[in-house]
Length: 459
Image 1 (cartoon, rainbow, N blue to C red):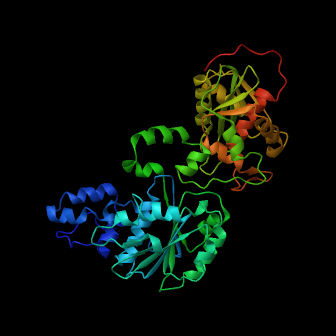
Image 2 (cartoon, rainbow, N blue to C red; image 1 turned 60 degrees about the horizontal axis):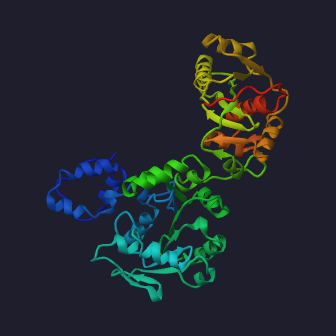
Image 3 (cartoon, rainbow, N blue to C red; image 1 turned 90 degrees about the horizontal axis):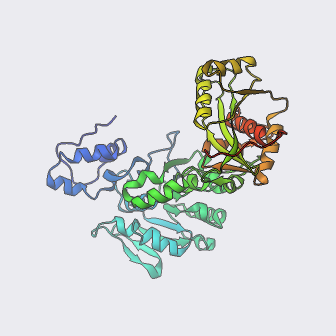
């Protein structure tokens, strides 16, 4: 591990030693080290990107196999600093800075969704290429020729993803591709660019994008020649408006849109799954109405060792109109019976539920007795699975399609299981414990004949 303290005298420019040091320290550690510098040294460091950048914003050295990387994918949420990362990388390779390039790169391609995006975001934007240079190193920007030219001889040409044919002919050493997941002709544009990346000792490309489940991006993520850096919007909070963080981030946290646009997650559906992300988003509400009944459903694990299945614990209620509202997912990891029973009983009391539903296929009467040991006053209905998980889940999914089930807030882990569960189960091979508990709760509330409707109450 490299020392987190700076050398006694500072050389005044970015060196290989500094790149190593910056890559192995946090922003807080770097700022603490500045306190020990002279005023002159501190001023020399003030504008260095390597000092202020997060680790995910610094160029990788190699792939996981130790080989030179072909593409560096910077996957992040809105405002996570992707544009700044791209602009600084272009600056570094154009000037031949240590840690970026061994010598200045001669020919660079800048490709955005449209030429307007390239100009307004990648080049002239507040975090764009011109903004990250000081006045001595800033390249000459020729908008009419759509190119940048540095004093080192490096030239960057601008291209629009709306015009794949424009990439026929030119050749490059490096390329920066911005928001690739939004390109309408992504496959064709990317293919044309690959034919042009044929100069220098190590042609390579940086791809900055908010993820979407497009085939090209998924292939690149799986490519062993790729290195992936990820960043959330929250990681760049020091440079974002507090009101944005308070309103937008809190509003969309946990939803599909929030996980994609803020967390930088690649969210996709399984083609043969019973649920889709859109179906769940349509079912989302911010609060539940007065409810007639509330149940807590438990799907206990067969064992309690660390590799055992989770214990699914999900609560739901039904209103006077027969609509189901999923209220909580408090599923536990592999836990001993006393632990999951205590968690289920605590949720029962907190929501003032009417019933605790427990699957007894794995534990038989032991399941009910463990719950009774925690609190003998809690009513328990024992249920036993007589059909496969997919067949039991299908009627519940139909209620979602009919708009009769709502999620009060967001339950990312549960919703992932729902959208990745098909006829053969989950792709991971794990048991869908959260989903099982959800199915038992909804079945108890809406799919069993029941006489009379209790008086509704608020939670």
